[in-house]
Length: 129
Image (tube, rainbow, N blue to C red; front, side, top):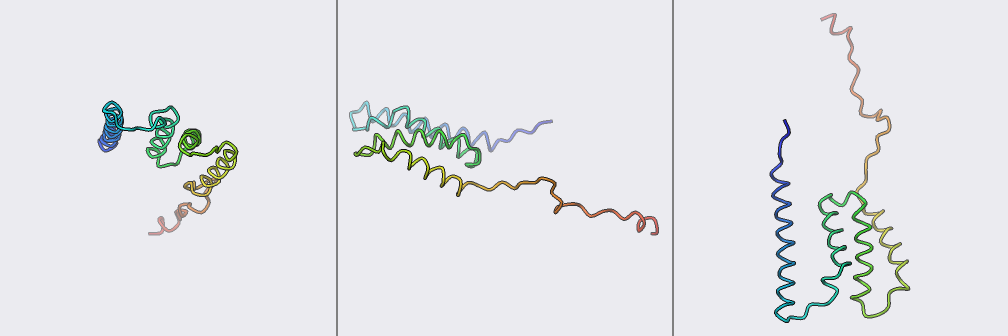
């Protein structure tokens, strides 16, 4: 029988609750008349937030979230920064990929795994006893 992990369900509910709370607060502030920058509710900021959320849920191990963060981050940075960063985009992408390769969690590769073998059972000793 399959067991149901309530902690994961509670964490997802908490995450979605926080997401909806922040999104609702942003819309409320915008409707009240407070200044909200145009890039906060743009497609690339949402892509950036989703990429970070997926990375967080997977403990930043899977690689799909990196593409979303890079694309969303580049377009969001282009709107936030006051100078033209289009000439720096390639360099920023390469630096980001380099940091990802350096800082990503290491996987343990087990090809044949001869080091973790169980000791052989000596049947002669068990028969003599």
